[in-house]
Length: 431
Image (cartoon, rainbow, N blue to C red; front, side, top):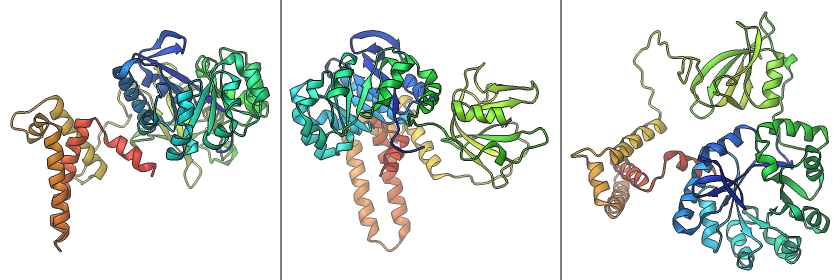
């Protein structure tokens, strides 16, 4: 579902490499912020707000690395906030993968950056955090022109902000633990684009239920909606339909199971793959016992409407044996070329990364790593020049050789700088 819906946005407060409770309480709630972000994504969060609470340059760089990994590992739009002092800090947040970066409107120097960063990166990529209503009331024209979203971080100012703010820029409201009635009341306000903070973090597992409650109250939210009712499917003699399950990134076939009508409805409702066990004659949510949940990315019916293809985010192993896939008993296999260009890149990259961790005597790759970044850059420049020279030759074979040399040295540079092919592909897909 697309459109102007109200957002439920968990918030991660980063401090010394950990996720802590909030901006004023550094009690650690998770030592793995990346895993926590994946948990929020799997439970149907709409976006993610991350505050960098680090002190000093070293901690700040560590926080940026964590935010970058979150942006790679999840598909949630991320808004990065905290530790913004100059335009360079906004650029860093956007370059590590954040969809938006937030200025702190409690700081005059951040307000002064508004026009510059908005003109450079686009209004839709700039948010403004504020604590008191006057922080925005005093800058109405600036916000209207250059800010894409407001983030209210002080719950005591909610009533005054919503009463006094009449700008077109919508407000993402941070809420403490509140009742569902209060949550619905806030989301019903036309000036609110969503809710973040403790109220969402503490109820992350219940986000699908909260979204259903919002819909029941006439609030438009981002939910899974089935394009086909159960009656459109052609069922087997038991009133069920087979489901082929694939990993949504690798396309690896993980398993085959069956759904009845209730399992289908629960899958669409919860976002977790739910099946009907023919051996036990009961519904089962994949992962309820093992923790190896399958989170829905897409459901597609075949041409005859008698089979469903499910693409999922698989937690852990799909097979009860502990194997990633249920399909591992090879019956026969002919020799064939299954070369996939991306897999070749990944394979070569894996060898290069292994050389970096486990040096091998006589390895040219290790020679480059030992000589350092200047040597790697020198070789990369030489190979780029060789491509230009080869391009003047009518024989295209020479170009292939030189491009291959260039790509190898480029991958050595990527390994040296900690850049992965996945990140490159992610960046290219945005263009």
